Amino acid sequence: MPISNDLHDSSSPATASAACFQWQTAPGAAALSLLFLDGPIPPAAFGGALANVDNIPRRVWLKDDTGNRIDEAMACREGSGCLLTLHGGPAVRRAMEQALAAAGIKEAPAFPFGRGVFAARTLSLLPQARGAGAVALVLEAAGQREALRRALIEPSGIPSLLSESSAARYLFDPPRVQLWGPVNAGKSSLLNALCGRPLAAVGAEPGLTRDVIEGQCEHAGFTIRLFDAPGVWTGGSELDAEAQRLADTWRREADLTIHLVPPGAEAASPDGGWVVPSRADEGSGAGVSIHDPASLQALKDRLLEHFFGALRRLPPERRFALHPRLREDLGNSPEAARVWLD
Ligand SMILES: Nc1nc2c(ncn2[C@@H]2O[C@H](COP(=O)(O)OP(=O)(O)OP(=O)(O)O)[C@@H](O)[C@H]2O)c(=O)[nH]1
Ligand SMILES: [Mg+2]
Image (cartoon, rainbow, N blue to C red; front, side):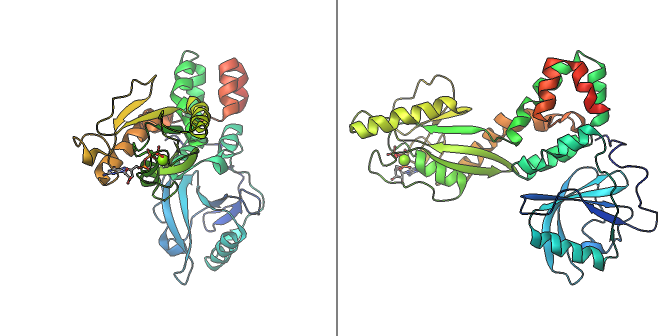
């Protein structure tokens, strides 16, 4: 990953002998806090967690000088220092400040991390990033000013830049997947199994689910939103039919519909989406079963590949988590986007 040379101001007060720190986010009950450490960090500080930090963001467990865990953070090298993404909130902040004092790391007078507009705006997306994988990609993107400059100099590169980065919107607004199918297809059971929590009631009684129920599936650091729905059937009451109609409006807003087909049912002929045999342990074995962890894992992998695969396969210097404003600017006029690089 290219390191932007403007991420770190050369007039920073760090010297070869002293590290210093500065919070990049205001105190408060935010979801995430950003802390920039500049200069050589004592190797033993934070239980040695920052001794081998490099350009690719990774998870570290920060400990205080008595070995107590402070927080699980993302750490990434930036210029002459290190950027930490911590959980927000006053308790973590206070514990960090005590550990910094114990390590002899003083607060720096203001030095602007991300002086470049691009880095600053890209990093402003961090609090919206959903999942550790999303945080890592935003941190990487903030350091890619030079790669962006190269793409902008070559105007024919902009369309591919935009298409490559389009999936990045799912880092902030996770993709929506609608589970669909006949009553008793196993939609609610699958929602619970994929999310790892009993969100929806399940049972052999047909038409048990009467509403759209949302869950979140976290997989490999990425978030996917899943929606359960009332089953498709003709034997229900007017209330069931009304619930179905409502669910259908949700389905049309989903990014993907998974049509579950239980053993013995007619295969759906969906207008797009995936057809997946369900309750596979009762059928031919092909498809997904809540009793077969490997089949659940395979479905999650397939979803991850569908929504994030292209983005994750790009070389690091092209994995732009572009700020929505920058995407808009690039779409309108490459010239307008250049102000991001000044
Ligand atoms: N053997 C087996 N049984 C399953 C599986 N998934 C669901 N079931 C059972 O199938 C029945 C129906 O499951 P639900 O998850 O409630 O089905 P649904 O599609 O949500 O049904 P409705 O809400 O009525 O539309 C329950 O008795 C579940 O225990 C599976 O993978 N294998
Ligand atoms: Mg159900």
